[in-house]
Structure formats: structure tokens, C-alpha cells
Length: 541
Image 1 (tube, rainbow, N blue to C red):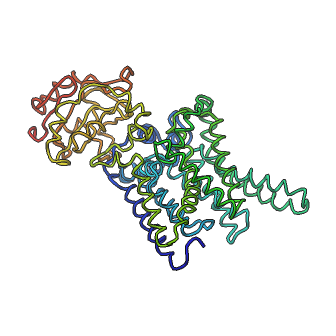
Image 2: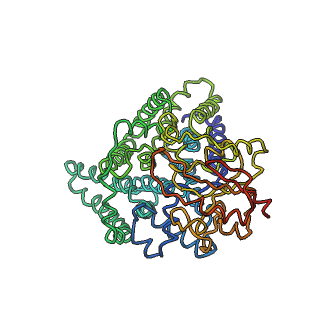
């Protein structure tokens, strides 16, 4: 027992507080977030494809087949919004906290500390708020890894555990094939153990191997039903994503920083040391559990690196591919942290000490820098590419053009009292300056889609005639000119793109050509410089 029975309640309070904190961090301003970067992969597919087209291709930009089918269903039955796009990932991120609390291989104090670390993990929080499959695949891989061990050890309800493994492996692989090393390596580990037992007991080998073959066959059939059609139909594009980029020692190091949610090298050393203590502590209690998790997580990390998928040399990409390993990494960190707090003679101080340490760890991470309100672009790579601004090109290579004075004037008004429509835009962080501007003016923002007023665009845009999409933060310039204000106060037209790096090539509408039509409808602008032209929508009304 880590804590005496009389002192168990502080750990219960800590776990409850951690779950509430995790819920708040995952929900904070979520309803106001603008879809950016990879979140548009699925949206583009919904706009331009039917259900068979979604189900039978991975796409050049992976759209996550089942998640996109879910989005298409919503678009056809009531309309697709940012909120409903985020709901499955939000639920998965919260469910992971409860899954950690239910793991019997750890004690009550470890589980409370562990769920605290999961609740404040910047990577877990970010991906639980992002319309991409990673929070779901993390939860499913966690269940699959635990369920396989329960099934192999013939624990109570072994058949149900086997079914849970097959189902979660199938769903995770369908959501994103990058998860397969995590979910299939349990076969390699326990298969190797069964073969090694041959020397000791040849008569007892047939039954364990038969069980593995049966479960493996069921799992393979499920995966084949989901993955063979897109593999056959789209093999060239799927194969083109492998063997292109490679991890480097620097990217592995920066990936570790992101997994731990920090940017300071000395703190990384301390956390790795605590993790090592936690591994040793768990080894003394259950060596098979440690070797099993090491085989699955480290083996998967090596397999993904050897596959050399696109962009793997970027730490943010490798970190999210390794997300299924993160809960177990933090579990060992929790064990190591407890080894330290148990040196306190007064048991009553142990849980509060963990709480204070976790708060300091959160403060050392990236979230305090971007939780200002409003911030509708928390998924922008300015905040998520690297947690150290000194190593983040989306901070270091931004254009040095002056911030338009209009935004500084807005900053003199009460925060959150105005709404701007910003148009045109690009969905990629390289060409999206809104986080920088919003941090200054502290007003709400909506993205103005200029199709067809300033030409027809289909990247990050769709016309107002697509009624199945009911996005709250994406509005149409054509409807603004027809008299619909969307509750906004100003229309800000950007004459030229923001480019990171500054010499990047990017397609941009000819805004100067469509300004006369806008002015004819809305009246003369109230502000203009060589970057933006601003129209007062309230005056126009």
C-alpha cells in the first residue's frame, strides 16, 4: 500500500480535481476555435467526395476514413459545425483520464498522480481539441494494449477482453494505419514468449499459439475489410507517404520535449530520471508488465521511424504518431514522482505535494502562453509546432511587416466587445497571421470566405450554396454583401498574404480587383494601408 487507508482520501480528491482540470483545459474556448491546417483534410473530402470515395482512398492528405464518414453523415443530417467535428475527440480525451483511473496494475496514489499528468499534458490537451483522429486512436490503442494482456493472462472475462482488443485495433487502424505497430506488437511479444516456452513444455505450446492464431485471424479479417479497399484503390499515394523523410537525433530529442510537454533541457533530464525510477519501481512489482510495455511502445516508435513517413523529421509529427505511448510514459513518470514524495514522513502532505509539483510543471509548459481570451487559434503551429519559441520557425521566420495600426486601435476598446470578419485567408499556419493580430486586438474573429466575389477558390473555402456546412466561424463575403452581417462589426480585407517564410509562394486572390464591388455595397472604407482595407459593417447596415 502506498498510502495508509486513512490517507487514501487525499488521492481521491487529487484524482477528482485532475479530471475537472483536464475537462476544463480540453473545453476552454473550444466552441470558438477556427479550423486550421490538417483539420481541413476531412472537410475538403466531405465537400468534394461521396461516401464510396471517402471509404476507398486515404487521400494525398490523410483524411481519416471513419471520421470523415461521420462528418459526411452529420453534413447530410442536420449540418456540420466546428463543435460536432470536435466532439468525438473531446470525448476520447476525457475518456482516457477515466481509463487511466481504472488500470489495476497501479495503486491508487499512482493512478491519481498519473491522471493528473494526463490531464495537464499539452499534447493530450491539444489533440483532444483538434478535429483529427489522434485523441481517438490514443484511447483505442490504450484499451487494445491493456485488453490484449488481460486476454492473454486469461483474466476474468478473457473472451470479452479479446473482443475488446480486436474491435479497438480495427477501429484505431481504420482511423489511422500508423497505429498498427502499437496494436499488433502484442502478438510478437506473447508469441515470442510462447515459443520460448517450447523448451520447457512442448505439450503446452499448442493451446497458447492456437489462441494467438484465432485472435490474430479475427483481427486481420476486420482490418482487411476496412483497409484493403483503400489500399488496392489508392496504393500509389499510400506508398508515396513512406520512405521520404527520416528522424534525426535532434528531432528525437525535440519529440521527447513535446511528449513531456516542456521546452527546458534541465527539466527534461529531471523528468527522464523520474521516469527511469518509475520503470525500476514497476519492474520490482511486475517485470512482465514493464517488458510488455517496452516492447510495444519502443518497438512501435522504431517501426514508425523505420517506415520514414512524410514529415517524420518534424518533432510535432513524430510526437503525435507516438501519442499512444504517452499514457504509459506518464504512468512511469507518476511512479517515479511517488517514489520521491513517499520520502515525506507525513502522508497527508504527499497528495498536496504532487498537486503543487504538477501545477509547476504545467506552468513550465506552453499552455499559459496561449490560454488568453479570446484565442481562437490555439491549434496554430505558432503554439503547437514546438514548445520552445526559440526553435519554432512559425515564430522565428514570420514576416517583419508592421502590425496594422487598425488592430492597435481596436486594442483600446473593451476586449471581446467586437467581431471582425477577416478575408481572404489561407488555412495553413504558414500564411495565417490571425493569432498574432488577435493577441494584440483581443476581439473575436470570423474568417471570410471570398468565393465567388474575389474569384473561385476551393482550398480552405466553399461557396455559400453548400448548405450542409453550418460553420460558425466561417462566413461568406457574398452573403455579407447581400446584407447578412453575421453579428460582425468590421470586414477586414487583406491585400496581400502573410508568408512564413517570407519568400514562400502562395496563391492569393486579386483583392484590389474586387474592392470596388465591396465598396459599392458597404460604402467607403474606414481604414486602409498597404496591408488591409477595413469596412464598417454596422454603418453599412
